[in-house]
Image (cartoon, rainbow, N blue to C red; front, side, top):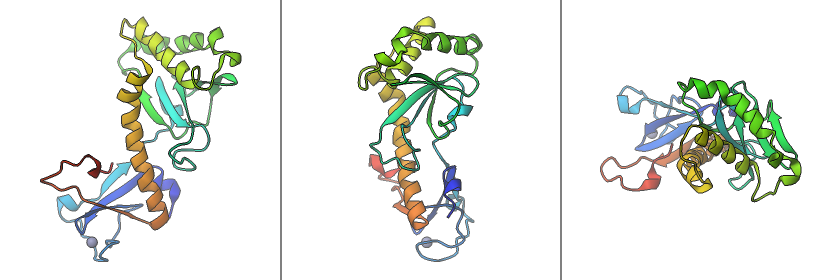
Length: 223
Ligand SMILES: [Zn+2]
């Protein structure tokens, strides 16, 4: 078992009418023990990439990670989360009780929400200056921090809204942003975490295949 590899991707095969997640393409089905031929297209193993990215490689993004540890190690589904905004060269600006932090590391396994289209050249060019000036404001000094109402999320969302209004676009409130951008990604991430932990523990993880015809249950699709 190589947990480091699993942090990048899992393999999904179909056999015995089940979806079977494994750390590598298995020669034999873990359920029935028969050798798996992968001759038919629908039997081909599928690579399930990790939903997490190295935030230091993401430009102009909103990042989300556990305050302590990583999503795949130590995160229990309820742990505190921390958010930040990346500039264009790998630094992660974030706000905490110590004020503005500019992270050079520690954001290697994040949920990532890209904020800028790659063709928005003007915005990309101004991004770092925007972020730097925004972060220098008195409102982000340590003494202004309040755990529930003036925190890392306030900082990141206020910045996003400043950029939106500078672009002449409508601002977003916290629940809009969370529902539209954050929840879909955290939902996907939590499925991956579940499968990852089971594969680490047992070597594979089996789920019922979604019914082809009467698939109206929302929870049946894993990843
Ligand atoms: Zn089988």
